[in-house]
Image (tube, rainbow, N blue to C red; front, side, top):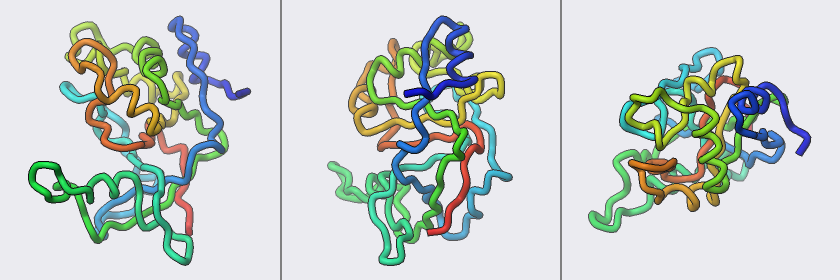
Length: 200
């Protein structure tokens, strides 16, 4: 695609080829939060932290593709809020994370943002191989080292797990192979604040 940079160079040093996606191809995304939560300004970004028993890291900024818009062009729903609103098969109730009064903040990548696209099982396999967790880490076979990926020397700013990426990875066996178990909907995980908030 013609997009390279520090992220691709770092992965190449690890013996794995990773190619950033063109940030212009990222779908419109937004961050959903409770109404009383401050907006996710880049200046208040919290660095990602690996977790002991989850494929998802703590912190960073989570966004998802916008699914509905107001007549004024502001986001009113995302893949995440659609998922949380969907009734559970057993209880018939929405997810505990569902907030009917959520506020939506449109987010767009900076032009130089290095974003890694997960759309196949091989994409995730290569990511875990390029950024391995320590040998004694519980999630070593399953998740990449998010903290290493977010380091300036690595150069990666975000990971986009598309709908196809989720379908290819979500049901893989968590204990022995790379998996996106726990990523409930298409998501953009910002590892570093290479984004801006946009008025809609």
